[in-house]
Image (cartoon, rainbow, N blue to C red; front, side, top):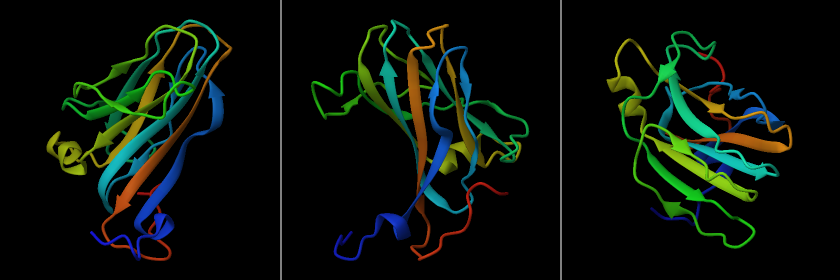
Length: 165
């Protein structure tokens, strides 16, 4: 792929999943995006852990962005993690899995899930939307910001909406 004409805004759709930075205290349910126009999707999560907590990140699928019929993924997704972004900028490939658990320590972290829309569709029942939950303890001092990055099927100045069905 030539990068000479590659544009982040025209080739990828970046969608806020958590409405900005939010506390993980008590858990989080993200917004959902439609994968109808995506070749590939990534869930990108940026954590600030000021209290020791082993949060569990669970990608989920649904049949609508509402989300209708939401359920955990059943296929192993590719996962990358950096459990200490202050010390390194390297994302380390993890074992592919259906979820990921953060190390229980006090650090800034980044976790990336790579989702192939064909794996979502293969789950059946009309699944074509993606979201996630974060199950966490009661640490009000822990925060996350989440985003979806969608590789669009066709690069265009104004890609179709991913937050409507």
